[in-house]
Length: 462
Ligand code: NAD
Image (cartoon, rainbow, N blue to C red; front, side, top):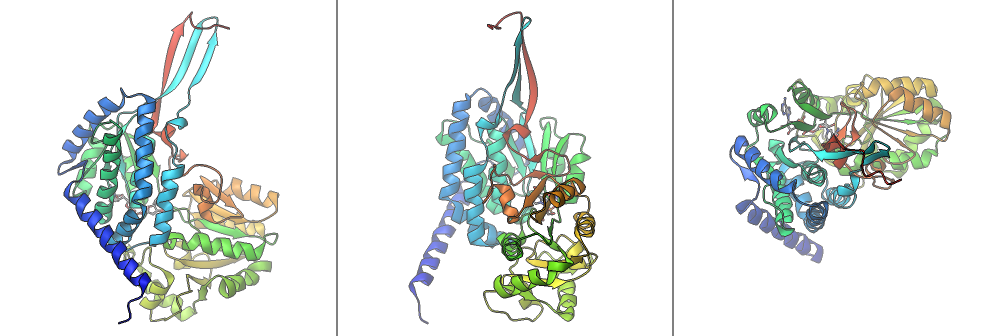
């Protein structure tokens, strides 16, 4: 066998990654066999964190950012190896984004009134120990992003991660606790159990020391958290449509849509999941996607095979979620070259590969008569999740009408969906988008409670 230099480099990187993984598994911080113990340890750590200055908390956050950069490739490889989902290169970028653009203590703002009767402040104070449930689609990205925001706000956190991503989540938790210790903070600022189950999450949801739960995942977990009797932040499922109207730069729209849809093999909940295109530009859009953007047009027969492969009577076939287009096509016996990155076809909005949230690089195009018809179809396809939607248009009346009707937490105009996460767009990053409960893109301030601090008749020096 001819062994070239890049193959040798890949092997060395893999061995180094594996060494990191086994080293961390041997001495993972914040991991307990019992959920009650994990919560008790996080509670002890919170009593230390709440007495630390904002400056000290910021040192912990700074260390988390640096360590996330240092371990981005290891975390990306672990995530792909453990879950079988996603793309290593894109996951590295996601970790850099989390490290650079998740807000820290600067996100906490004080409101003040002063006058004849003194000075009143409203401060953003910590809740205590927050419970967090995280998905397998962005496992370490969500653990790190949640931890930065929650710790910045003076909380500690106990995770019940997705069991399919527990090793990757534990690696991330170890990194966070080491970051705290190196900054002079406590161990166990972020904890978990080594075998997360529905039982361990039920213990968390009922525990007297957990006042707030942040759930990032599908409809089941969000409903469970919102029924728990605790305050819940519900970051649920989406099925983001992207509308393209006759005023759009159609060629750029094709590029942006395929870039957004294929990012990390369509795992992000904000990613374009289907297109609704106005009839007059629909063929042009499809041609650009096929000719210039590495899209493969599947026949009716191939659509039927794909439906049977990716959807089961119980829902999504997990072996297909987060797989690349070539692998998915291989599963139905279609061989394509390496440059194929997305599967496309035209269908009605009720087509199962269009109406379902697939989290795979499969893009169905629904044809609309005009913008009003397009908006109506897109609203139907979003299923009332109020999560994300996108549009390519230069007509501000069309954009405004769409934004009002679809009423989502995120609406990206004339860019790939990931611009919403601060990647090629303004604004901060989060991997927990509270669609169901309305907080939108979460950050440190989301994990605080409002506390009024009143000084009567003094400290007004106007
Ligand atoms: P999932 O719903 O299968 O699992 C998410 C988490 O919830 C896991 O930790 C799982 O163990 C737990 N869980 C599931 N059902 C539960 C229940 N009844 N009680 C307690 N815990 C339960 O989702 P997934 O496949 O890991 O992630 C993909 C889904 O998450 C998609 O629907 C995607 O849109 C959504 N998501 C949303 C956001 C957001 O910010 N809104 C971010 C990422 C993913």
